[in-house]
Structures are given as structure tokens and as C-alpha cells.
Image 1 (cartoon, rainbow, N blue to C red):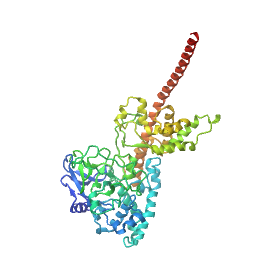
Image 2 (image 1 turned 90 degrees about the horizontal axis):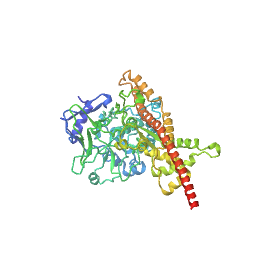
Image 3 (image 1 turned 60 degrees about the horizontal axis):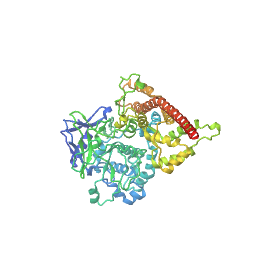
Image 4 (image 1 turned 60 degrees about the vertical axis):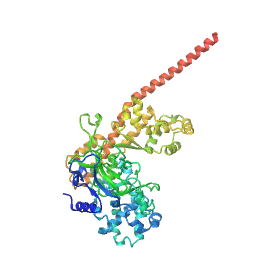
Length: 564
Ligand SMILES: C[S@@+](CC[C@H](N)C(=O)[O-])C[C@H]1O[C@@H](n2cnc3c(N)ncnc32)[C@H](O)[C@@H]1O
């Protein structure tokens, strides 16, 4: 039985031209590990079936809210730059919520959560458990607070006729700003604007053009109407919203997409590779359509793009904890033991760590004591500049060697090629670029030819140093220690109200997933180091031999010439 807020929300939705196939789906509470409140299939739902559809007028964006028009385009765009990032949408949501029953979205606000488990709301002690993970650098709390202080609050204070100033501590506070920002982060969709709507409204396309990056994407139907391609866009815009939070990125003036709150579509939970519906857009509405048969009693799952746990926790406040399709002997000592985690977990390595490790490697072998001056960061600058201009990657994302995300990778027969793929081509290309002798670097730059990735002995030594140092950035020891810590926590059930314990558990799960990738890669490097060095030794011997032979042949030829 749905809650009273949910029932009120359903009636509001349906009385505003929203369509729900109530014979096919309902909303219910699943266990917390499956997302809590979500949608369930009441009957077997065939593929390509519309479970619900949302008229565009119910989307909540700065184009549908009355606030931007009330403030005026000049104030909105020029004075407060509310068309950039998420600030405008957050302010619209604060203002609409403050209107209470007067707002078109009143019932929608009432069904949305008010508290969150994303690290944005964690204490310093809780955040300390995430040290070393890629969550920490991407929190963006300071940027969000700057946006509130420099854009949103001044906009609120500038119009006492629109924002009752005595309501600032309750309805327009920093806490409410964070709450709305997190609602956007965990529930919004990137939606293509409907051109006809723009033309009808005589509106400037840029008004309300929101930042890239939000929770979920909407798919475009094929020209024939409603059918969709298999495996169509499902990305979470991981790259786009990197480092971005409630502040968002700058608006792209030509972007025809916007970030929208989409009532009902955001009631769906997601789990790694479990998607069975997707949101598609049409000129008048957005439709949630099944992408495969959904059995009666199954949860109706959307996709959030199957991100790693670090990203899931940062943006949504939960993690995926599933049986892994691969096990590692080094981890369990017993290949039979089923490991749990997120198969999409990755390890992120910042370029500055790589630069440091290359410098150490070069200086250790440069006979510095024998007269050579050590290489410094200054020597690396031109190379880093070129890399950033040409490739632009300052964080390398490494997958688990057994994740098999790219079938072509595992089918590559050449072990050196496989090694390059496993250790990530761009990382190895960067190491090679930084390691080039000065003359070779000058030549490469002259020809505008970035070095190709290579897994030679030196690159492996650098990769090893990078991984070892990266491991030292985490708290909690290695994979085995984290598993033990998790086991100890899980020995006592987490009560719903035990927020601290739940957060600690999530933090361990995130760092354990990253360390699992790290330790598996370290295993690959150590295994490869032996045969790569041997191969290089043999290569060097062959080269010497060939040189000797060539010299001998030359001598013999010289002798023959003399005799002639
Ligand atoms: C788009 S909303 C989904 C609906 C949400 N359960 C509700 O009650 O409104 C996204 C939020 O649902 C929760 N969620 C979704 N999928 C989940 C999962 N697989 N495990 C745990 N929580 C999940 C997270 O709190 C996330 O921030």
C-alpha cells in the first residue's frame, strides 16, 4: 500500500495528464539494499511496453518554473548568472517548494526524500574513511557553498518581493540549497529540449540551459517512432560531471539539452546491469519503456550508467554489492570463495603521481652523483603541457584486469599488447612521453607525434611505483584488512537508524573495490616484469650479437677486398 504522499502524488500526476499503466506497475518498499522505495511489475510486462509517460509540462526546469520570468532575463543571466550550472534549477526548486500548495509541483516535493547518505552530508570523521578514494576529490562542497554565497543568496536578497526575507533561514538556507542540489544529483535527467515548445513560448533557447551531468539520460527514439536501439545511450556523463556538484559546469550555449526533474521517472532504482526500462523522449512527453520482458514481482530498474561504487556513493549515496564475475586467488587464497563488490569498480590515478614516479625512476638511474644533474619538475613541464593540449587526460582510469569490459582486449593474442591494454594505453603513453631523452622529446614534438604506449621494463617499474604509492594513500590497509573490517561490521546487523555504521560500511566497500583493482594490477605488473626484462635482455643480447656479426662481416669483406 503506497504511502499517503505517494497516493497524493499519483493523483496529481494522473490529473495533470500523466499516464501510468496501473495494471502493470505499482510503487512499493524494497529492502534498503535494493533501493528502498521503487517500482514493481504487477504482471509480466512485455518488451517495448510503456509503463508510464510524463507530459513535458510536468518536468521541473528553469523553463517550466515561473521564477526566471518573474526575476527577468537580465537579472537571471547577466547579474546572477543563474543560467550556468545547477544554480538556477536549485533556486527554482527552493522557490517552488516555498510556494507550498500554490506550486504546481507541491505533491512532487512532498514525495521526495529530505535526507541523504551522500558524502556531501558526512562528518569529517566519516569522510576520513574515504581517504584515497576518488570520492574525496570530487565532492565539490566548497564550490557548491561558493555558488550559494555568491550567486544564489544575493539573488534571493535582491528580491524581497519574491523571496520573503524572514524565510531565508528556513526555506532558502544553505541546508535547503544542499538538499535541492542533492535531489538534482540523485534524481534528475538530461533531457533534450523540445524545439517546438521553445518556439511556441518565443523563448530564448539559452534560458535555463543547465549544466551537463545529472543522474540519468533520456534516449531519443528512432525515427520510426518508439522503438529503440539495444544498448543505446546509458551513460552517466561521468566525464562531464567530473568535479562538478551543485555548482555544475558552465552552460554550453549551443547545448540543446537541459537538466530536468522528471516526476515519477525518478522513482526507479538502479543496479549494475539490471536495467529493464529506459526513458525515451517524444515531442510532447517522456516515456518509460521496457527494454526486456519484466516478470511479475520483479523490480522495475532504470540505469544510472553502471558507475563504480565511488561514483554511486558520491552522487546517489549507495553502493552496488553483487557477486563478482571474477575471483582472485591472491585475495581469498581460495579461488572458490565468492567475492562481492561492484564489477564496474575502477582505480583512478592522477597524472601528478605518475610524473613524480617517472622523475624518481629517471633520477635513480641517471648517475646523478656522477655529474648528471637530477631531472626536476621544470624539465617535465613542457611535456605535461603538450600532453594536456593533445590528450587532455590528467586522471587515468584503470579497470580490473579480469573485468573483461572490452572483448577485443582479451582476444588480443600478443601478451605485450594485452599488457598495454590492461595497464591502460594512455597511462603507458604518458610514462613513455615523460621518460623520453631530451633529443627524442624534441623530435617527437617537432613531428607532432605523441609517443605510442609501451610496456617496457622501465614503464613497468614506474607503473609499479605508481601503484605502490597509490596504495599508500588509502586508509585501512589492503584488501584483506578491509574485508576483515567489513566482516566485523557485518557480524552485527546494521539497524536502519545507525547512520554512522552504514556510512562506514559504504566507505569500506568503496575503498575495497578500488584496492581490489589496484592489487590485481600490481599482480599483473609483477608477473610481467620477469618476462619483459628477460625479453629485453634477450633483445639486447641479440642486438650485441648482431652488431658483432655485422662488424665481423665487415672485416671479412674488407679482407676479401684487400686480397682481390
Ligand atoms: C532516482 S532515486 C530512486 C527512488 C528512491 N528510492 C526513492 O525512494 O525516491 C535514487 C535514489 O534511490 C536509492 N537507490 C537507487 N538504487 C539503489 C540501489 N540499488 N541500492 C540502494 N539504494 C538505491 C538511492 O538512495 C538513490 O539516491
